[in-house]
Image (cartoon, rainbow, N blue to C red; front, side):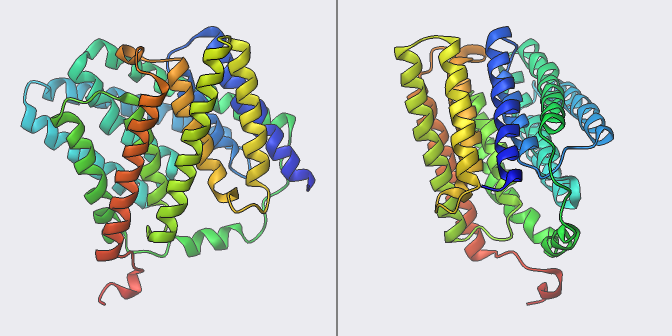
Length: 338
């Protein structure tokens, strides 16, 4: 295995498992979200610049606070409230398409879906999210920076800028319509049916941005994403049952280390499941982490129920993207007229 691949696995394990384990020991709110953010940071080829990290943290604070203020005012007016959620989701996708990136896009979707969902239950509880989503982002930033310092990455390849430029050749309006057609109805259904599965909304926000970053959501992509999430859900169930047999923080930390090492090594291999490793990792962190460190009134929900909830959500969202792709395929600006 190349030296950089070994360093990448060490970075992923040290940072992600470190945040996951420390969150369990100190018991800060939504610590598994910090582990997910750390994993996303550490899957990048280089460390995030300090200025960018600070801007992202300040952006998260302002975004979550603005969402809390706006939707707290709209809460007494259900129709206006739902309209505001729909508009916020569309604006989040539009901002992401404009070049904001996956992680800022995820934060925007969290502000558009998760904060309003919790506000319906409790404005005070929503304030916990407002404080701790940016807080977990800050912790993830420190953990990833430390990981890149201890295990330095090789300089980025010269062709990276060219690839990024080529990947941006798409019709932004068409992509915005496709993304909104899938995510807005799903999010509104949560409010209309009174669902409050916070982990599912976080998962859908992350999954939507991952799908949005792809040029097409055809059958091959849909099968790949479903494989990744089913793979991750299966691991989460096994981990949860192991934790039931040996209910200890040490057990959870050791499982997190094993998870990062094994999936990190898988992602660097030539195995057919290698492309699914990154998505599987975030799925395990969300399902397993949320099961052993629950938030709000979800404490009595078993891991299997969470897996079913997230599995059905993944199936609905991915299949919906694939269907929309058949009728409204993504096209480059040069082919808009066709």
